[in-house]
Image (cartoon, rainbow, N blue to C red; front, side, top):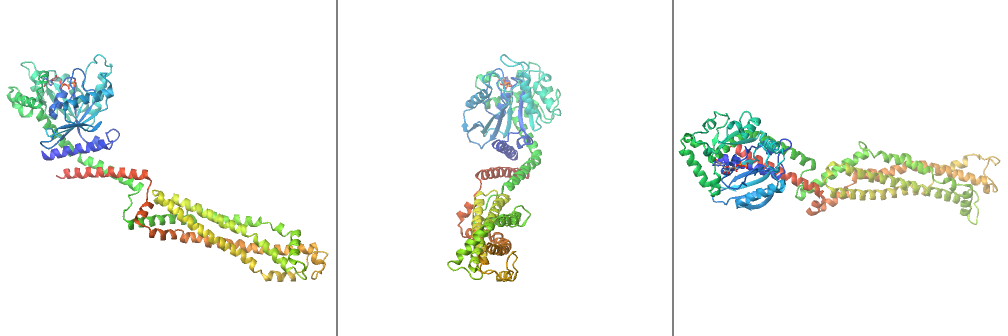
Length: 613
Ligand SMILES: Nc1nc2c(ncn2[C@@H]2O[C@H](COP(=O)(O)OP(=O)(O)OP(=O)(O)O)[C@@H](O)[C@H]2O)c(=O)[nH]1
């Protein structure tokens, strides 16, 4: 008996857990569907409510003429320790413990009306009621509206069919144990309950036949043919019941007295005396419990399988959104560094290939830089007029005697200065590409998805580093350009003097004094400077990319987060925790899943414990 109660108590616990989880059955194979329930089925006034009440041992169901039960009532009975006060609790009004069962009766009626209105309409939305009492057996029972053959005044014509369909929707489920109520003063062959039970459970495996109103049979007749299984055979024995008559109810005969009276009836009955130990509401309750135990034992493997499947699904979901983060600072630091490394990996893939973006750096050198160099305004700077102007200014009050050394220097310096623009532009262009790759890499790092704070931290640290690399790179390329001004390639100018004059109408020897100030000569100076600048340009076209890659790209690959690592290493526990802050919605989701997981795991543990007893 003890194991049986713990078993059924367990079922009640799981069912309550399902209800809390919003699992009311319905789609697919839910936990609720896998567990057995008991539904009370019968024609109107057949004694359904009376049977239910005597199984429960309390008066609490609404009574009256016509259809009283108009919504399914899901009734969970919980056995409590001896001496505890009895109380009832509705799912729609949790935390309100009702000790007055007249109030329970009223609330059922009111709650029915809330959905159906005061009409005689029916609704298939169930009312959930739990009863806690030392005087009950752990059971879940469902009271259903009485089957009827004709609609009464004020009811739609479809009512007969509607009720039948609703009742069928409960009893056709394979886990439903049917308590089929038939009054003894009617021919069993015309019993609505038996008709429906036969339809949904032809083998009679899960149907319990209950005969009420044995005391109301005509003198000289009895229900032995039915009770002994000769009229209609079921897998389970028929149980005869004597409930309180209307007169008893009117006289307020209580449940205990009614049970005693029922027991006496069978013990003293000439017809049913030999069956006395197998008759009555108490026996029916015991029979039901025993059967439930059997059914649940059979279901345990499939229930555990269902729970395991759900646990697997929840675990997979947790893996997908990420496990909870460690709480000690060592583990947090480790996690942060791991995440940084994951980011770094992705970033390097972008640079080295495998992921797109790195090729844009080559684009800067191959395309942008040469194009910018080509656009430099040397034509204007080395125009006849400007050469003349610069050379004259350089000469000052004393015109040059042999070659305009100062003029050459000034023209070359002025030209070289123009290279600073494209050199700086290359530095900036590569900087922008690297910055964009950092942004892309953060988005592309799966592991970082849950940590928006850390994403921002890494982005800031990386961008700070890139800024430093840019500064270094800028200094380096400027130095390259400056170096070109610092020392000119002597050889180039030596060669110049050896070359014969190419201009027509001029002396093949060195220019004479008059020639030196001719347009031709200035043109020649311009051409010489231009050729020299062309040479410098070719050099810088090669050295600027080397400097940029050396200072920016190589450093980004080598040491993008080095400073960050140093900073993180110094941080306190709280700061580390804050860096691992997650999206609140995600955290909530994880908590919810973890809670469900706990519930399912404890359900499994409990079932395991019972299963191995
Ligand atoms: N004498 C006697 N009266 C009974 C017995 N069972 C039920 N009654 C009476 O029959 C009437 C109907 O009983 P209920 O238990 O309300 O029947 P029900 O099937 O729940 O009725 P609805 O919910 O209206 O469909 C009541 O007046 C009961 O007192 C019985 O075994 N003996």
